[in-house]
Length: 207
Image (cartoon, rainbow, N blue to C red; front, top):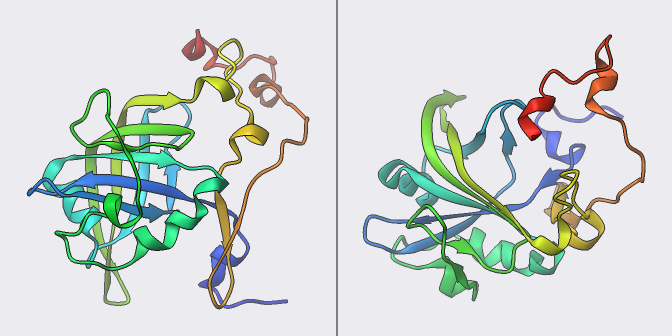
């Protein structure tokens, strides 16, 4: 079946994250974002795609130069819509969605308590663009502090228990969002398997 070209989210499972920011007036903001990805394995950069208008989160990113990417489990799916609603900038989604602030280690911007992982980020670069007369931006940020719950992370090999964390994800249909999670298939391949000598050239990063 051929689909309309814009319906990419109908066939690509996306992570659901909460990005927390603080306004110039000190108001806490939380918004759900799914268009987010790490930029290459050697780097500590991430990229967030956002609408260039009507987004308090984007305004706060620009004015404060920092934000926190919070990774929720499926137990927080009921917080997506309360944080996605368009409300005046003076309204805090922490209060609206009854979320608890988690003090950050390196930023003044708090994270969201109850998530399984947190990325504290400093703004690196913003690429402002326009497509079909609609403004959007790619926000590149440097991760300055990365944290995950102790009970789901294996410090020896760097793996984590997705069955326990139950990361919140979604797919989209014509009428809305369908929430889901991931399943560990108990199948492993080392990075080195991609290279002729069987060695991962970036292995030293993990020591």
